[in-house]
Image 1 (spheres, rainbow, N blue to C red):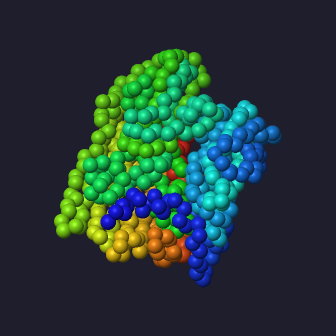
Image 2 (cartoon, rainbow, N blue to C red):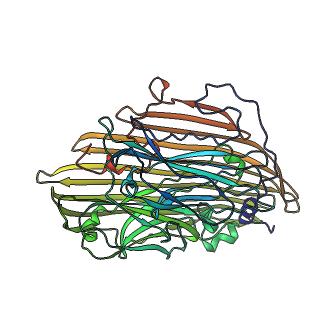
Length: 596
């Protein structure tokens, strides 16, 4: 049998779906959440909008009606809002996109301002009869230092429009400013932002091997008190399905992509290991089987969340007035990882130069290496068994700076784990691959400030689970007949902040989707599909009374139910304006020992 699993996926991604008619089913009667239309084939997600503070807002348009037909960048200009002052409680990026009906791939989209990334995600694929539109929001209050001055920016959304690929993508974006007031005080935003981009006004950098890095040499202010790096690492090209790959030596036997499945972001300062970030297995809306993601895409597919690496223990090193190389690499990269980052720093306004030291770094010298347990066997023309990949590391980084408010010591302890088990059954009539993957982070940060030594402890736990199965059946000539697929994907974060034993803040976020579909083929071409269904469930809560629950279900490409209030008191959603219910990084409410 000459056909391979990788070849099947490449064929599916090559645009076999634009001519397949989208089926419809009668709308299911249900108590529908506001803003949803049961029976619609348009995009429907359970994700919460960004909560807004009280008061009148000001809106600044970044661009309106951009059309993306090629791979040229689309520049725009920005000026601070008029009539909203320079003190804001929150700033929200809003963007709207649409694509005309027809054939088109999913495309990566990113927005940039002053070289810094303010949005990163992908687009929804259209069909021959459905032209989807979608809305994304992001809290960009951390960029307040950039937003106080006129800037230039650009939208990057490469697309091909020709006789074959006909979908035209359009977009608009704006920033919404909420002036600080008595009920919504000024956000505790970083004092400066340093982008890690391609250096041309904004753009990601492609890492094609595990040795490649995105490196930028920065000379920072000499009074950095806290520092955080937000990291994005998105697999593209040969790395789009990285979670389904096996070691090179087993690729032929498993009829799968090589390079292995272990991926992890490494952050370094001047070559010294400084932090680690897990890689989220984002699945694009054309991935595996596009019908699975219509009308509800995978977790975060349209709006990626970065992972925030705490570099505060290295503040004393960064404060020496010398240039330092800050670098991002991806262990296991084997094709193309699209990478970018933003370094956020908080400064001591009472002292121009801070001294201190890095007191511990057990991450330095730890190799990012996975173990492989190969249980594949071949007998009588049948390949079966599993390949298990495991990696785990625990480390401590610690340091202090002497500030105008006394010595601040930061001690970060983390355990990062990765496991991926792939099962295979391959014979002349079937190809079945199953994936059971989980990346986790357990992080505890203790911050001690001042002569009395009050200690604030923050703890965070992240889970990135992925369960997937891809099946192919073949006729006696080796042609694909059916291709059933199923995916269960999630993102969860549990966070707490304590002063001694007193819990100051606790929050939980859980976002998951379960979806499946079966493609039908005739003579190598997709002729239909059956059994499409999906359910997305989003839950968010905290100890201050915030609660959000939404459930969205689809069948055969249309929305069947969308209900609010799941697991919330009285079945009602309630989100306090300063919370981050999507699970995005939230420095102002988490790490600063001097505020709640």
